[in-house]
Image (cartoon, rainbow, N blue to C red; front, side, top):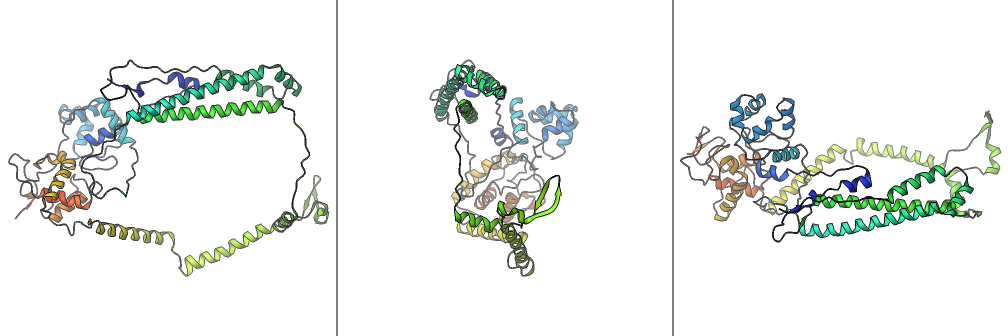
Length: 473
């Protein structure tokens, strides 16, 4: 048993710094990809119905606890007749969801993931030959432990700085010099001093603790403490807050010193150059104070009289400029049509992008679609197709293609056509009876390889009964 850093308790540290706070982390993404991704999608229907919001539907039906029985063995739950929701879901597809050996905690992790999945941005610069195996992201526990040690060291240093600053503030507040200066200043700053003293007193007596769970033996070659990436983010947040506390205490200290420090009053004579005065006069058209009596208007209210100033020239010029611009805009966009409006510009950009995609696919020899797909017979292509089939298709069609949730691919019957172009279109675009589209998972060359491999499958005597009306000639 290894010690994971997520098993460490941060309660005392958070109470001392923030009064409350908790860290929780849960990720069902890997479970979803390994157990559900082949037949289900998060936000749209596929071979199986979409999973987003599924748990809430069971809860709304008053059967929130039965969703676990449904996932573990849907056939058994239907047979009991005690679940209305199970009967409704079973009507989605004529095929039955196979039983799943999975714990309640793993189910909760998967359902939490599909209700709030992380956003993943595709990288267009990825290699055109997509990997045939799913990439497993492993945590670098050795590197994380090293970063963890440095961040703990930094946190200890910051806490010591906070204690020193808070102690210095309290010592200064209690000094006779400070008390004398505050007495001379009167009652105005008393509330401020009380707040500073109370805050410094609280910060100067921190209590921080980490509660460790009982450690077991770590596996060979692994660090004694496993630190997840989320734990490093939490430590980073704590250190940032401690830095803010240090800066705030420093600000308080200098503010208190400035309160009691004698201030020298010096006459500040503004220096304005003649050039700046001329620029200001041109831009504002302001009348000098000594000449304001010349533009003083007659009406008066409660001793207040109004000056008849001109509008600032810069504002007037800007107003006329907007009028000129509006005429240019209308003529350019709506009369002559020299420049494109947003909708037309968007269509041009999309057309340009489609041409670039087509050129890229042609350059990389991937300009293959359901209209020009050809049967591939090279051993390397068939081997690549078999590998991709094993990753993406075996859950529904079995490894030998004899059919499970999906139809038998080894017999002579075809539902959507037996030509290479028909099979290519089925894999790429999907079909309405539960076949998901794979154009987002495989590039055109890989789809052509899988389609060619499917057409080489030998008939399995124990396969699923034939489906479809089209018979291969």
